[in-house]
Length: 164
Image 1 (tube, rainbow, N blue to C red):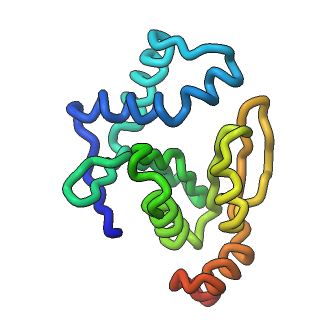
Image 2 (cartoon, rainbow, N blue to C red; image 1 turned 60 degrees about the vertical axis):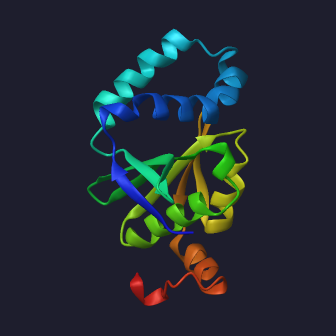
């Protein structure tokens, strides 16, 4: 499954908002009791203003199926969001994007976070991320490169230990 990225544009606003709502609504309700669409649009507008240049639309077979954003600040690299439309989940696209992002940034400290109740944390742990902090709502993780490289070599991800 070969995906590509394209840059975010203003026509993608509703796509991205709907994806975030689908992906995060249950967690927001769990931790804060409700999903207030007006308040979430306000948060989302601020997110778009601040991150618009980093947001990439994920394209598969000519269809927009999700989005990805990340940031590099000095030596710290953070994978901020990988959100895939539900009908394309479970096909390995998100995992492939995650692995490729990690491979490209093995020389950096790689960070990711998720809601504490999100089962995606199991994938992150499998790939070699370790918990470094917990908040009331999130688990913050950092990549243990040795664990990742062991995983990558065991699964033939095409990463060699010399890359460190």
